[in-house]
Image 1 (tube, helix red, strand yellow):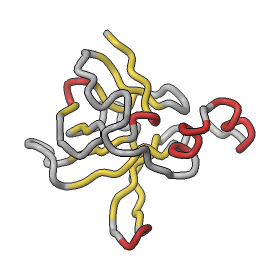
Image 2 (spheres, one colour):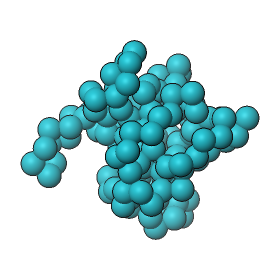
Image 3 (cartoon, helix red, strand yellow):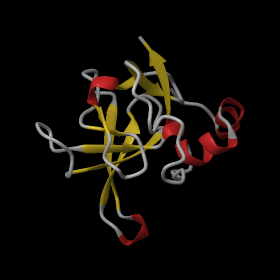
Length: 127
């Protein structure tokens, strides 16, 4: 999904644009989906593609929604991120390049992964 900057600005709130298109980060412990425990799917704010489901969500204590794996559709792309003097792996929506957050190797078994995602980069669809 390719949109111009002005189309993205019209589609997203100011906070969503800052995080999703400019690779910003929402403040920890402020996201609406952090404490969500309902059953359902987490989809991309930008394009609506399924990224995670509630069975993969866990409380990591980091301040952002965390998931142990992506959905079976493999809709998450990975890119090296060496900004801020750190070496991390950025995660993006494979369909529209929405910045989601980062993935770390300190999650629970069996994957050992922690997908640390900004709430504003996600929409929740309850089942």
